[in-house]
Image (tube, rainbow, N blue to C red; front, top):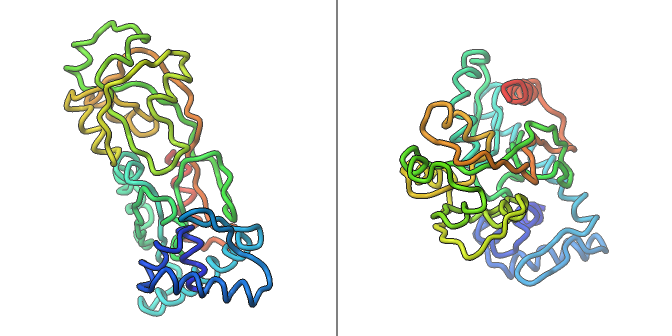
Length: 284
């Protein structure tokens, strides 16, 4: 079951093997034994990765919930107290631009609740058994997860003050000719400049782009006048308000995905987890 849980989180036997410190062949054999015992497939093999069957998805939901309860029990035993720790998973950009500046308010209001942060741009890490809450971007539908809308979103071009002064008054149809800063998102649902221009009805010829693996680094480059970046309103609004970033043109496109707070549907929320969830929703 531990092998199945790791393979389900990663949807990749090699990554599961690396986490468990065994060979991919050992993971494959364990999964085959599980499927033999159940008499039904839990994974569909596709190239280097795997996908759940409907039975496998249901089993993973139950297993991850059971593992989470074990994790809670061990944590409580170590700490000598119960129900005081909450593990929150979110992306690097959400943690940097939204969560961290607001956490002081949470600590002041709820000093007895300890929040553990799992920060990763790989959303597969969010399925770890110890995670109580997740803040993630998408369409609001994930297997075995309950989702509450945190915020709708819109995106628009942002840059540093000097860059904005240099290109003041530029037509929106000319934006694609500027130096563009782009993200290599691990999630294919996150839009790129191509998606942005397509949604805005702007033909996008060859574009000069610099790519980044972390959104905070991309924003730092934009602030340093190195190019034009796509600003997610939920993240960059405080930076614009403080003058660190400037909107270039009034062009705005609704984001194809939205922010949600999610949790395991097969797992009841403790009082402290519910407190953190409600605080995040209220702060948003």
